[in-house]
Length: 68
Length: 227
Length: 244
Image (cartoon, rainbow over all chains, first blue to last red; front, side, top):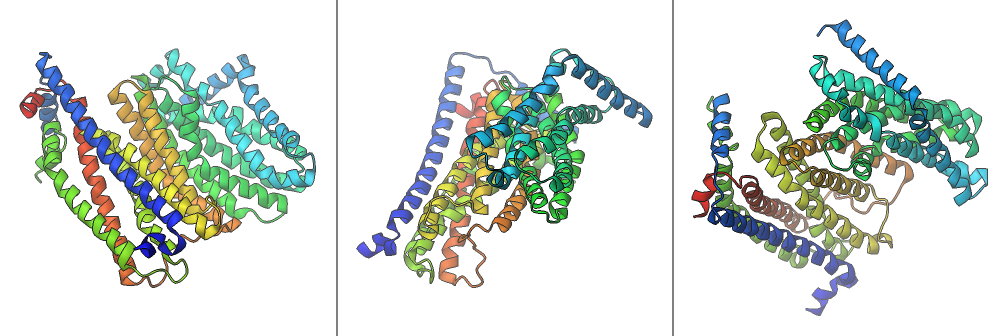
């Protein structure tokens, strides 16, 4: 086991490299999910506070379809 | 949109910008002074020995030329956007691409070309041998054309943004890396007295690619910036 | 030809729902592949005949470097689609890409440096791959900086799209020029991956990692895309149906 962690003497470089990569993987998932949660809460808050939804999105969708 | 009409409009743009420049000579002279000052700093900060300076002269010349060319970009489209000239370009019925190419050409005439012409003076101060000047001049002519074109795209893009300045440099400097590499290499070869056809061809290729694509991108950017 | 499938990608609610459905299909295979490749790379693969166990950094360095470049390509493609077909969703994709791309560019630089220290004896060498990667980082920062400096979303979308397209045309030239520059100045390069015969138990984890990282990016992109769409469509009526 010790042999595995010492990585033939390269432990000092190998494990930090893996740690940095793992950190990036975790952080990107975390921030993405946090952003989505925030956007959802914000949207729910707007809906609850009675901000009126308009039909802009529907209009664009049909306009796009109309081009074909 | 007849051929001669476009050509006349482009010539008119060049003439107008040149006339404006003669009214505000400081704006034209400042990048040139900057170029001279930056290169002067190296003998002071590094060593006055010409042999050592000669070794770093290619890098110094090109980085200084790059920064000086960047310095003059801020004003390339900004004033014309503020006073409505660019709006007039858009509604004039002439292709915006060509009109912006004309403006870029003027930018080159007012910075790239004078920078090139100053190179013998500045190069001499850095210990560049007289025989190398021909090669350095030709590489700078080709390289500064590309720098002006890349800069025009950057200047167009920052029109829409609240702050230009540092952002403009961040956008354009990475894109200018190939010009810097090929240009500095050409200069290095010229100083060593070797044939510099390879980097000159590459500089030429970049300039041709820039001439075809950069005005299109600049026109798209300016349209977005003017909204 | 029926183009409705294409136009559906222009419809935010459709893409929002589709992205939600697809996320697990990217996330779980990505997790399995990465974990499997970790085991394969750290345990099963034999040490390299020259670099010993140090070569195992390749299993995180190469996939990060690949993601950095691939994400830029995805970003520029999405930006181009958004610009040409005026597709808001495509711009949202491009906007969601930049942050992840910049992260993995940094990771590829750091892991490259950590690999370089035992191999070259110093953390930084002007190796062509690392140098090109550094310039790529500045391209990402420029893209994000330009977006951040424009208040209006639609203008930010299109201005940054033009920049992404200019960048993607320039990127091969930058890479070529850096290689060329390096070939003249002869900096050492240990990160040549085109060795003639990489044994299967070394190569398989690498390929699994590359695929795993790509799928991982797909999952993150889909989540970020949904957040981006929700923020942009805050006033649209479909959000009411979706969230209640």
